[in-house]
Image (tube, rainbow, N blue to C red):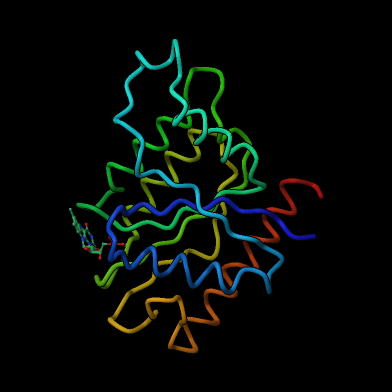
Length: 185
Ligand code: FNR
């Protein structure tokens, strides 16, 4: 069985290293019974709860994309030791209107790249806390902090280092098993 995973890239940058990492994961995924499909977040306006009375189409589409996915993968940079505002905004949109939280019970995993020696560790702690509050079933292990050096992943998502390829495969394997366990199918 192949699970359909909706993935969100936390960076809106055209040159994003996390988008490159997502591309690499998309290529490796089919060998692990996963199909990765992007859920875009770049067109969402800033959320406020006045929208709840008449939810805009862009918010409904985000919610539908999450709800129709078997699982959710978030690939994100760290901004100032937390998650980018654009990603938090998307999670806020998906969590509302009250009582219709799209993450409820959804298997989820988090991964991210940065050039720093602790990579995106602190952002991921914040993100996991937000996802747990949203009642997603968050993968605990392996933690996936990718220290990105130029050339590690090419523009078209080829990983140039064997150790990293093996680690990403291990991560995807664990995510597929976690999804299966949580969905019971
Ligand atoms: C950063 N960067 C960064 N890196 C890090 O390891 N920890 C951090 O807290 C931050 N903070 C931060 C804030 C802001 C506003 C920017 C623009 C950048 C550096 C960051 O990891 C680097 O720019 C990555 O390339 C961003 O990921 P994308 O957009 O290339 O995927």
